[in-house]
Length: 209
Image 1 (tube, helix red, strand yellow):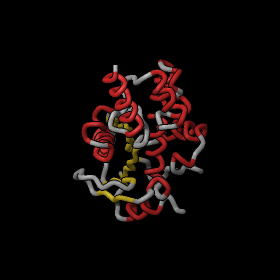
Image 2 (cartoon, helix red, strand yellow; image 1 turned 120 degrees about the vertical axis):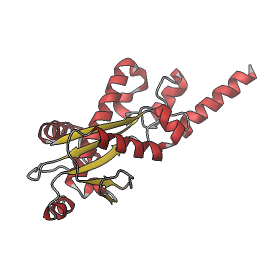
Image 3 (tube, helix red, strand yellow; image 1 turned 180 degrees about the horizontal axis):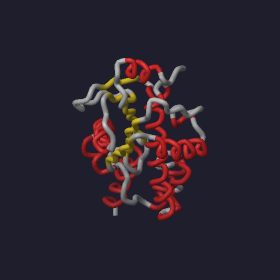
Image 4 (tube, one colour; image 1 turned 90 degrees about the vertical axis):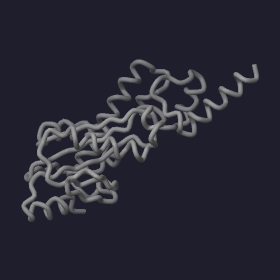
């Protein structure tokens, strides 16, 4: 797979400031959805860079530092669990992406977006599985993933009994067991089925008393 195909086609048209945008955190029960917008230089090369989900955590962290150092611009977009509950995860993911683009401290001439279509007033290309097809989107997926994981590590320091360091807020068996044992803390997505089920069972117990 040529990860430079989309970028090279744009460079040939004289477009030099190409942003990649991706998000992470649609599935977790706790925490925000996080998006990153990254603009790379024309000569950027990072062997092995790919979709963040296919990389080890050690590699992601290593690439995160390199991308932060070498990128022309980086923007982060964060949408809270509370807002996810209000507008749904699809709209929240779009909003996070648009915030990341807005927060990017660099000129942008074209945006390569992982799967989504965004109304942003900048020429854009939506690429299905873009994080595995575009070097710029792959870079943004690493920035988004490591940024969100670091938030979960901070949460784990405050609430180690929930195990956020291992599951990052995703609905694992141990995570759901911890919810039933310790209850909910701030940041849970109350519209997500396991959390909604827990809340409805709590209501039944309360009403039976």
